[in-house]
Length: 214
Ligand code: B16
Ligand code: MG
Image (cartoon, rainbow, N blue to C red; front, top):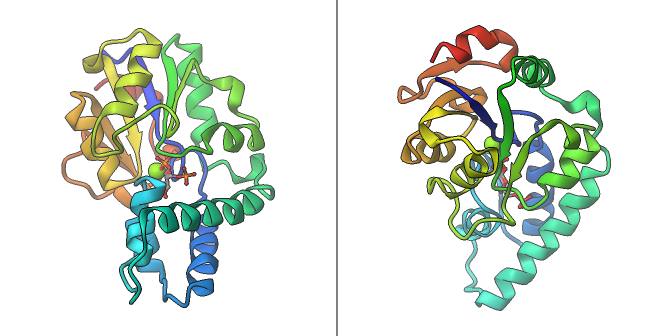
């Protein structure tokens, strides 16, 4: 029985991948490194430092850990600047309605995101107050596909992992949910993942009844 639904943030509640792309692209350009959309796609759901490794794979230069942290910081400043333009209009189809309907049915709702910017993003789209629990990149030592972020969200909801459903748009996130012994609805870029219990292009295409029947 599903007692909590844990939503990934980027790609599920709101789409920030274009903003990540623009920020990484600018940082890469300043370093003289090529960065393309296929690489950006591989950054979906993975941590900032792991994403940086994807960006640096075409670099001829070797970077020290300290230089890498500085580059990640530079990208984050560019990204935060771009986040200023986010508004409730950027909420993905069906996301808000699904959260509202789940709450009406007394199902717990949480965020399980790799992003360290999850709270400011939720604030910008005016959804910060909607969730019973938030677990994000600031809470974890192991990124997806490790289930840590979802297990923390489940614990904060007081619900056992087997009674949780995760909604994810990234392959690493689907793995994380399954590794945590949770059910998973795959949406967006992950919508054809054969491992998911349910699949849909967006949350608009799926009813809360279908979610709770899992
Ligand atoms: P930040 P999610 C992830 O969010 C993004 O999909 C991924 O592209 C990003 O690298 C990661 O957050 C870290 O984000 O730099 O803001 O800490 O999909 O797990 O909600
Ligand atoms: Mg995501």
